[in-house]
Length: 576
Picture 1 (tube, helix red, strand yellow):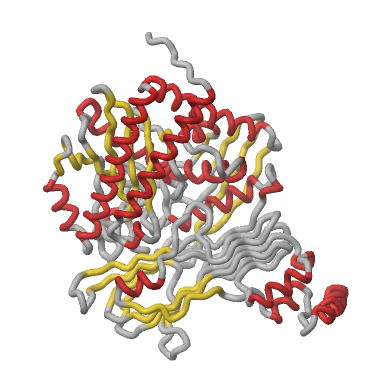
Picture 2 (tube, one colour):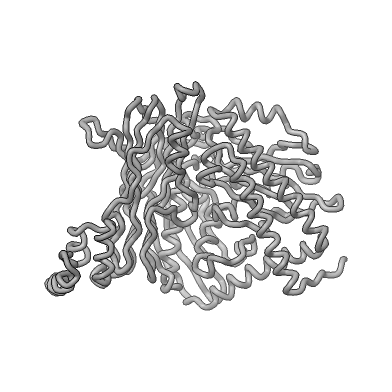
């Protein structure tokens, strides 16, 4: 038995910063080499370093959910290939049940790292693909009834052997995609990012020694777990429950999906029980346990320290129960591809429950997430295209400040693609892109505003949307009002206007059709009548709040002068 390696505090900090820096460099390389706007502009991807057991030792967070996905994907690779894993190999996996991908478009590229002939760890990247087949462009059908409706499913497969690509596998992937050049280009970009990570990690072991790096990773796991335990020990003991609802599952449109959490906290032990959540759904609202675990980790990190070091040690600081056959632990082959609304409802429920143990960090619900997918054939380039966009909304207000406007919230954390990029790469024009007045929930702290994004379609196409909080709006907190819900309308302000459900797949767009997406605003925090008059006046001046809403929601009658505002405010609020 080899003696334990001791690592002093200075070396540990240097190695920790180096591991984090390697991952950040991998991600920068991936974003620069992305073929699709999904990766290049929206940055719907992340990278990580894992140890030889597949546990995450470093993740520079872009998409927090991937802290649960990476270990599950690595575990699938190790189980499938075991001792046959060799230097120069690369593996692909996107199967939500055989691995940990949130849905099939999120493809993982995993490469082993060998030091002195022995397996040392893994480099990994997970990135959304523009199209991997299935019945609709973009492979995200809101009406999918099983994962076989969700495109090409790959269990762990060997993509490269001793750095030689598997051409047969590439041809299979290309044959199953409407945009093969983009998909293969993005996969190769992921592989390049992984190979960069390998080189940097090997150089780090050459500098400090493989044994010291391993010991440092073990110590980082211990420190992460201990930090969670220490913070949890200072919270109130008890059992705290909360729930949220997803509008629908895409199939049963009048049936909200219940997400329920009971947080049990005793001493430094924290447990999340989701047993009372709804049964698995017919439509693609289900999520797998690795994502449930990652959502819990995201909430814990947010309440303890958003800047804390991210590794699998965090996952050891709490436990979860997700009932088999439920929406949070579905049985194969239940569909999962439009999973994000469920994740957001889960996060909102967890934060609501944890507000009892950390009231200073309580917050209202945010807008959730949504994606629009337009696919067809560009008549100018004669090529198939898939226009995939992630569109933001309003963040929920917090106990200390207003919610941010026009921003992706919680674990989504992707970017809105610039207008110039969308118009130059796809047959579409942006007619409007602005904030929606009065969409943020009123409160002592106001919810962030949602966005209106209106498109003119220049060619026949097929349209799909996966959204949320159109029926059930973002909840306010501590007396704050709900935010405004979202909406999606084809040809608004016309006799042929058609409102689509929250999730919809394959609506036929004609040339010159217009579609308008309104995203929800965040919920407000606290009594609106406690908001300072000057802040209400500033909101009116900026166009965030209308004069009517100032009077109705805040008790503020906005006059033409600040003196008139002060007098009118007192009368209105006293009357109320």
